[in-house]
Length: 370
Length: 260
Image (tube, rainbow over all chains, first blue to last red; front, side, top):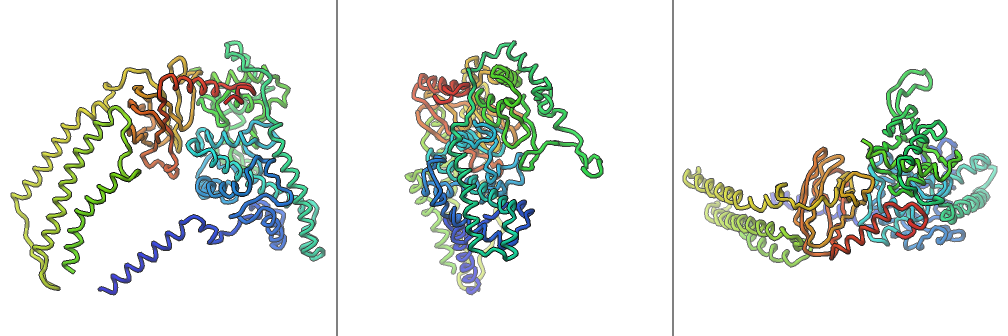
């Protein structure tokens, strides 16, 4: 009896100690969680052999550091171009990211954390270097202020909550780490694309090129792609969209003009957002056909975004806007669309400032029309 | 072994009393200080109930330890003394708690009415609508026209601004599941039910920043559903803030956006 008590006590002590060790900060590093560095599953389509993947992963580790010690490449990196505070800030950002973001956005920022699959819309995959709601031109990177707003305000009515109550320096560290994940993921993908395009990996895998040569080649590609992306980040501030003039008052005339545009074939808003603004226009919701047989599979949302997720147009009657509810935010949304989604940039259709403001006035009036 | 168990149970009352006395002085373990007008009534009720349950708890624990000593088996392997109960005793210990319960039900009624009955809500116009959702609080001020849900509304996330001595009246709603709007320092806690409108009111008597928390397990992100209550010193301070928030809300140019 006494022996059993002792055994029980020992078992509890061991389990407790294991639990504490498991959950203590830094233990992820200690356990050496494998770096899911190289590539998303879809890059498998290149058909790289393990040797190529290993070389690529080694190169990325060398340039960006292990997971626990993220840094920009020593020779090329320019923290100022991103507005980052430096290596220490990145490490701090990573700690915060692990506790607050990782469960949705994933270890490497692939939008594939354990809770991701329960969410619509899905968490952003940072590794494409693209986020939806920015103040910049469609092809440009977001500014730090854009990321800051998303963190502070959240994305309304999605699983992305507001981090309003966090300290300023924590928010800044998180922004830096997210930039880092976006940068790393994108460089990785572009380098992989390049060795695929040039067919170098085949030489390497066939043994026509030795490891040192291949490594040098990777260096060269890496430098090229890295600089290209870093420059984009550096110039994001200059790519911001601003209206030419302030928003005109939301007079019935302005709203009526916006409504005409909304319903017109030129702007085409109505095709997705529908005549009443409920976001279930003819292009959006309906029969989904089997591409092979032409049979109706189901009724549902037909549009997809660049990440392959269902794209549901906003219900404009609800009075909230994912990219922010300022008139300026709506102006930018209409002007440049939403990055990575079927929501287009109306500026490409020769709309002028007045047209866009009329549309904004109409959209802003929709929730209060009933 | 018998002595060990008696000692263990006899230790519970002094340890419990010691723990509560110690916890009183440790920040974060006891009630945060009250900062609202009606909070002292609620605290008083808390103390009454705490005294009743505390005394009962101590009494039960002491009797328990004493019974262990008196009726436990005397030697190793010996049997304890068993009885089949006592009708009179059972009647007494049913009637006394029932009496306490009835007393509490009547005694607390005034405070409950003041805190929860809509007829007791302040006459002031609605200050803001708080919409709980997984996992944040969206706060919508009525703007100049005083009507919530109109084009001049100002919407903010996770930050509620009020001023000192203002009878704050809040419309509470949920957009998905049950949440609970909890401001510990204001002694306010109210569930937000999807599809229902609830009213919450309180009058802060101290300025400063306080935490608003969700007090109903509402999903996996429940722990991060926190917001901030900012109590301004004067109404003018609040109006100044409101003017800035309104300007930010309706920013439409580069200059307006940069001013924030």
